[in-house]
Length: 396
Ligand code: MG
Image (cartoon, rainbow, N blue to C red):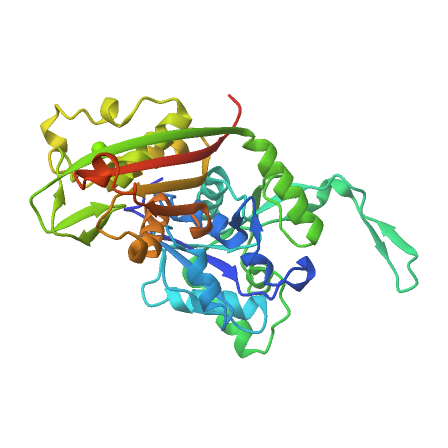
């Protein structure tokens, strides 16, 4: 799929109050398997190389929840969220207007409440929209569908063969959809439940392509429970790895730990930037994967790693987990030294490690201790770091 020929954007509708799902926050901010619904949706979309823009639409007042949601997410194509309207339709229009200053060729409209959208489904949506100008995913209906009257009595039985249950992402040529939305707003029509209905009303032909049974919409509390247990079953090969690293002090005015520069009257010496914290974490993650160690992937004999920033080693290890279809469930790092004092930097370290790993802050722990002036750390000869990584993988 060619990003250069077509600009393809996606509007992610996350402006609902989501009350039917229960809980203390809108459903798009509730978690499944430790990741919020919206975060899961965005994480899938921002990594698709053929998308030029991801435009979230959120409720006014949900900014703090949103900021928490995107910690560590790749923001290359992620636009700042735009506030939604009173209805889903108004929220979609707000998203389209936000994109209109630099209009894409194709726009996809996706409900944040469908967090299991797959790359294959998005690709089918784009391909279909390029062909027809408007295309929506549909699933054959397996239940028999009947109409009922106001007394609950059956009116008629519909022909199942001609019925489809419709999902998102729905994909459209951008300009005609924007025009249809603007016209509907002008004419006071605010009762459309999906974008295909607006397109149909505007006289556009809408094609249906194959949806995915796994692309469920999270609506009721039991949807969370089902999704939660499915995720747990999927990633039930739970591994723990440990990593240890030591670097000696030498001349300098700061040390680098966890990717951050901490002022000190000495520096740590080493072939790379001597980031003792990230090195221990890399070995912990690689240990959980049974995938060698930092030295086997980045040999100190190789001049290209001289002075290298260790976040490259760390993101490499994180990518190795993703490549296995897994997730990092938890990282725990302990720094041992008499000085510098780590405590004042602990929150910043956690945040930076979470950002580099693309993890929620609740999955990263940083601790610090002295060794009571005993041993090499006690004699202030260097810093030691101990890390544990818990990784969840699919059984293979
Ligand atoms: Mg090291």
